[in-house]
Image (cartoon, rainbow, N blue to C red):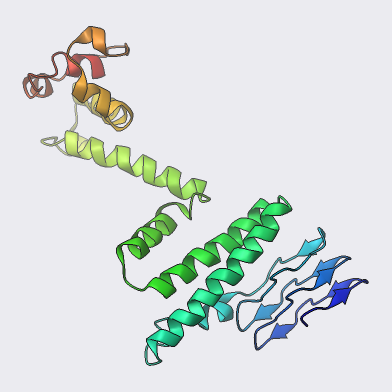
Length: 235
């Protein structure tokens, strides 16, 4: 469908595109719907004008991603797989750009995510691919607020567990021990956010004031000499 002009409403709802759906150099002048459609390969919209009322909701992109999957095509020519994945990167990037120009941020991120996935398939097992995967897993490329918040809470909890070395089981904690537990969690929170300042401080006057809660004698003894009173500040 290259070089096509759609003056009336273009409705592709539920249609399955087996081969590459190519709409290059085309113009959609009216409402356009790809709702619940599926694509065997990444669709191409290069140099295409798309009406603002375009709907990609419920589209099945799984088959398109499988078309250049290194795992599913592990017996194929690696050069061919890289070529297909590189073509997919450009196709997803173009759709992300179109959605970005229309300020459709959720749709833009959907295509950006697909682009980043395709980059991993194109580049194979590299350091950048590992960073790409980590960024996806930890925060959905900056879009997964709840996922990132969960990792943040887990980071604080992990710090609290490390600082709580030597505790007894929770069921046997005395009221004083419970207070120490709260202090350790507070210290973990402060170190997560202010650890760099705490490590560099040379005295109480160099560090922003924080309400003191008391200090653990064991931690005070382990305070590095290069950072006097850091422990008492953090607590």
